[in-house]
Image (cartoon, rainbow, N blue to C red; front, top):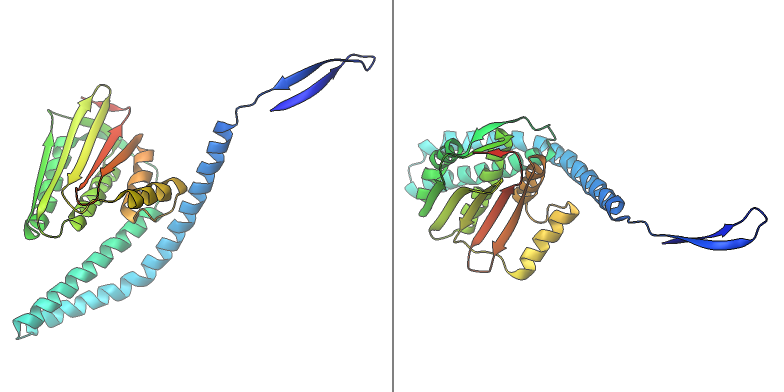
Amino acid sequence: LGAWALHSPDGTVWGTLCTIDDVTYHNHMEEKLSREERLAYTGRLAAEVAHEVRNPLAGIRAGLQVIGPKLDQERDAMLCREMVREVDRVNLLIENLLNLSRQRDSEKTTVSLNALFDELLMLYFKVAENKGVKLSVEAEGELWLFADEQQLRQILINLINNSIKSLHSGGEIALEARREGDSTVLTVSDTGDGMDEATLRGVHASLEEGRTGGGLGLSIVSRLLAQNNGSFSIDTAAGQGTRITIIFHTGGTS
C-alpha cells in the first residue's frame, strides 16, 4: 500500500494519491528462485556423493558375485545373494541422486502410454511376483501424451518403486490412465503402509520448500512433472495405501 500527497505548482496540497500493488507474483517468483537454488546445490552435492560411492560399490558387488558360487552352505549363498540385492538397492538410490542432479532440457515427443505401460509391466512383473505383489496396468483406449518419454518413464518408475517399498507381505499395485476433457490423468495406487497426516504434511512441506525430506523419488517426480506441464496429488492414510494422481493439463492428444 502507498500514499502520496499531490501538490499544485504553488505548493498547495490538493489531494492524496493512494496505490495498491499486488506483489503475489513477485513473491512467488522469489520463492521459486530460492527453491531452484536449493535444488541446484542439492544436485551438485548428489553428483559428488554418487561419484565417490559408486566405484567401491561396484567392487563390492563384483567380489560378492565371485564368492557366491563357491560357497558350499546354502545359508551362506543366500546371505551373499541378499548382500548383492542390498548393493543394488544402494545403487538405485545413487541413480536417484544423479537424476536429481541432472538438469537437462525436456525433449518432448508423442508418447504412447499403452506401449509405455506394457514396458513397465514387463520390467516389474518378476520383481512384483517375487514379493507376492499383484501388478496391473490399464489404459482406457489408445492414449497418447506429448511429453519427454525418458522423463515420463522415470516418473512412473519412481512411483512404482515407492509402492513396492511400502508392501511388505503381498498386496496390489495398479497403474491406470484415462482422458478427462483436455487433460490426461495417470494414477499409481497401492495397498501398502500409507502415510498418516503428520507424515503427509511433512512431505508436502518438503516439496514446497524444495527439500528432499519428502523422499528423493517424489522430489524427482515433482521436478520432472513441472518440466512436462504436469502436477500430482497424494491421497493416503496410515494402513490404507497410497494413491498418486498425475494430471497433464495440456499437450495431451487422443
